[in-house]
Image (cartoon, one colour):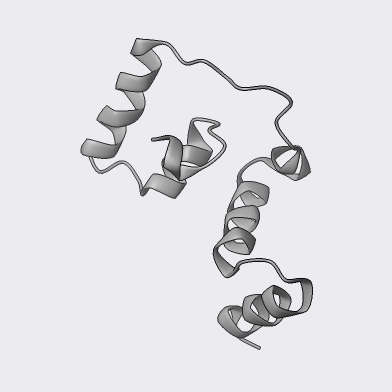
Length: 79
């Protein structure tokens, strides 16, 4: 069975958005089960850290999703 069908089946079965399942998969691949733990508080990021993340994106070092995982952000929407 191909990935799209498998994820789609899980999405329907568990009433979870397709993109959410892919996000969980990517986080797990990057850091294991600990990456799936729910955040206990909001993080505050320094200006230097924000600049590093944005520079990495502008330099083509990865997609928003890949960079969010690489830099330990909760989601690509934080970039």
